[in-house]
Image (cartoon, rainbow, N blue to C red; front, top):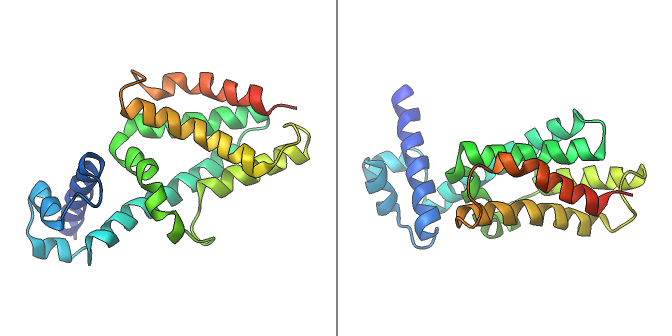
Length: 188
């Protein structure tokens, strides 16, 4: 059991590195197998295809991010506190594992059509949080979907800029700055 879990972890980490460097389409199963140092048969013990691997890597992390976002938002009492918790969490997640977090945000356009309402979703968590903030008068009246896209866009673009080395250093150190910018944009 432990050996199987270790092999799966090798596959996952190798795929993340390759998918970020070469893209999903530019990465073959043989590339993943070689990078992971395993046999093709060992790959098939864990995944049926490269597409299943790519979806699994995305959906498990996407769901986990949503669940933790919801928990952190609920723990805060103010709009500013919720924004700081949300941004701080995502930026800290990126700092801790840039391959995994970078892959999720870089590949989301390839996978979003497969996301359904049963899968926890960061977009829906943010939209609900902002819809409630607008209804309580904490945030200015605006279309919640536009506000959601603005919040997600800022967070994702900062991650993209860090991955491209346009922003240096840990993102967690910049979380309050980004959250305060969002707060100024949203507050009533």
